[in-house]
Image 1 (spheres, rainbow, N blue to C red):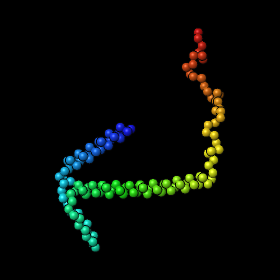
Image 2 (image 1 turned 180 degrees about the vertical axis):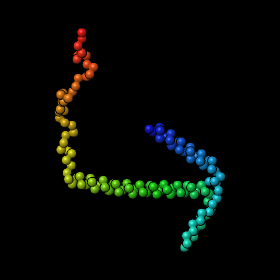
Image 3 (image 1 turned 135 degrees about the vertical axis):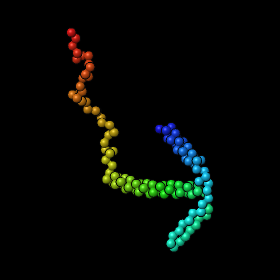
Image 4 (image 1 turned 45 degrees about the vertical axis):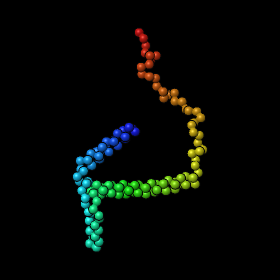
Length: 123
Protein backbone atom coordinates (compact mmCIF):
# COMPACT_ATOMS: atom_id res chain seq x y z
CA UNK A 1 0.00 0.00 0.00
CA UNK A 2 2.88 2.32 0.82
CA UNK A 3 4.43 1.76 -2.62
CA UNK A 4 1.07 2.38 -4.29
CA UNK A 5 0.66 5.71 -2.47
CA UNK A 6 4.19 6.72 -3.45
CA UNK A 7 3.54 5.76 -7.08
CA UNK A 8 0.28 7.73 -7.18
CA UNK A 9 1.97 10.77 -5.61
CA UNK A 10 4.75 10.65 -8.23
CA UNK A 11 2.18 10.33 -11.04
CA UNK A 12 0.15 13.24 -9.65
CA UNK A 13 3.23 15.44 -9.34
CA UNK A 14 4.19 14.47 -12.89
CA UNK A 15 0.76 15.49 -14.18
CA UNK A 16 0.99 18.84 -12.36
CA UNK A 17 4.50 19.35 -13.71
CA UNK A 18 3.32 18.60 -17.24
CA UNK A 19 0.40 21.01 -16.81
CA UNK A 20 2.73 23.80 -15.74
CA UNK A 21 5.26 23.01 -18.47
CA UNK A 22 2.65 22.97 -21.22
CA UNK A 23 1.10 26.25 -20.01
CA UNK A 24 4.26 28.24 -19.31
CA UNK A 25 3.06 31.09 -21.49
CA UNK A 26 -0.16 31.42 -19.52
CA UNK A 27 1.45 31.17 -16.08
CA UNK A 28 4.16 33.66 -17.10
CA UNK A 29 1.77 36.44 -18.11
CA UNK A 30 1.49 39.50 -15.91
CA UNK A 31 -1.98 40.49 -14.75
CA UNK A 32 -3.39 43.11 -12.40
CA UNK A 33 -6.40 41.79 -10.51
CA UNK A 34 -9.31 44.24 -10.14
CA UNK A 35 -11.87 43.93 -7.37
CA UNK A 36 -14.74 46.35 -7.89
CA UNK A 37 -17.73 46.75 -5.59
CA UNK A 38 -20.17 49.63 -5.84
CA UNK A 39 -18.74 51.27 -2.74
CA UNK A 40 -15.11 50.07 -2.87
CA UNK A 41 -12.58 49.39 -5.59
CA UNK A 42 -9.27 47.57 -5.18
CA UNK A 43 -6.59 47.04 -7.78
CA UNK A 44 -3.92 44.51 -6.91
CA UNK A 45 -0.35 44.97 -8.10
CA UNK A 46 0.70 43.23 -11.32
CA UNK A 47 1.67 39.62 -10.63
CA UNK A 48 2.18 36.57 -12.78
CA UNK A 49 -0.89 34.39 -13.29
CA UNK A 50 1.05 31.48 -11.74
CA UNK A 51 1.30 33.41 -8.47
CA UNK A 52 -2.47 33.85 -8.46
CA UNK A 53 -2.92 30.10 -9.05
CA UNK A 54 -0.61 29.29 -6.12
CA UNK A 55 -2.37 31.86 -3.89
CA UNK A 56 -5.82 30.45 -4.66
CA UNK A 57 -4.57 26.87 -4.11
CA UNK A 58 -3.08 27.78 -0.73
CA UNK A 59 -6.23 29.67 0.27
CA UNK A 60 -8.37 26.61 -0.53
CA UNK A 61 -5.94 24.36 1.35
CA UNK A 62 -6.12 26.58 4.44
CA UNK A 63 -9.92 26.74 4.34
CA UNK A 64 -10.12 22.94 4.13
CA UNK A 65 -7.56 22.54 6.93
CA UNK A 66 -9.34 24.88 9.33
CA UNK A 67 -12.77 23.38 8.63
CA UNK A 68 -11.34 19.93 9.36
CA UNK A 69 -9.65 21.30 12.48
CA UNK A 70 -12.97 22.60 13.80
CA UNK A 71 -14.54 19.17 13.19
CA UNK A 72 -11.63 17.52 15.01
CA UNK A 73 -12.09 19.72 18.09
CA UNK A 74 -15.85 19.14 18.05
CA UNK A 75 -15.36 15.36 17.97
CA UNK A 76 -12.69 15.56 20.68
CA UNK A 77 -15.17 17.42 22.91
CA UNK A 78 -17.84 14.76 22.28
CA UNK A 79 -15.38 11.96 23.07
CA UNK A 80 -14.30 13.68 26.28
CA UNK A 81 -17.91 14.08 27.42
CA UNK A 82 -18.67 10.42 26.63
CA UNK A 83 -15.56 9.31 28.53
CA UNK A 84 -16.66 11.37 31.53
CA UNK A 85 -20.13 9.84 31.32
CA UNK A 86 -18.62 6.36 31.20
CA UNK A 87 -16.37 7.11 34.17
CA UNK A 88 -19.27 8.47 36.22
CA UNK A 89 -21.41 5.40 35.45
CA UNK A 90 -18.60 3.10 36.50
CA UNK A 91 -16.60 1.00 34.10
CA UNK A 92 -18.24 -2.43 34.29
CA UNK A 93 -15.95 -3.97 31.67
CA UNK A 94 -13.33 -4.67 34.34
CA UNK A 95 -15.73 -6.99 36.16
CA UNK A 96 -15.55 -9.56 33.37
CA UNK A 97 -12.55 -11.82 32.76
CA UNK A 98 -10.57 -11.40 29.56
CA UNK A 99 -11.26 -14.97 28.34
CA UNK A 100 -13.71 -17.53 29.66
CA UNK A 101 -12.22 -20.05 32.10
CA UNK A 102 -13.32 -23.07 30.08
CA UNK A 103 -14.69 -23.05 26.61
CA UNK A 104 -17.91 -25.01 26.12
CA UNK A 105 -17.63 -27.94 23.76
CA UNK A 106 -20.24 -28.49 21.08
CA UNK A 107 -19.62 -32.10 20.16
CA UNK A 108 -23.25 -32.56 19.16
CA UNK A 109 -22.95 -29.90 16.50
CA UNK A 110 -19.79 -31.42 15.02
CA UNK A 111 -20.54 -33.45 11.92
CA UNK A 112 -18.26 -36.04 10.38
CA UNK A 113 -16.55 -35.12 7.15
CA UNK A 114 -18.33 -36.13 3.98
CA UNK A 115 -15.38 -37.96 2.47
CA UNK A 116 -14.46 -39.79 5.68
CA UNK A 117 -12.99 -43.27 4.94
CA UNK A 118 -14.51 -44.83 8.09
CA UNK A 119 -18.06 -44.31 6.91
CA UNK A 120 -17.49 -46.15 3.63
CA UNK A 121 -18.08 -49.88 3.48
CA UNK A 122 -15.76 -52.02 1.43
CA UNK A 123 -17.12 -54.89 -0.66
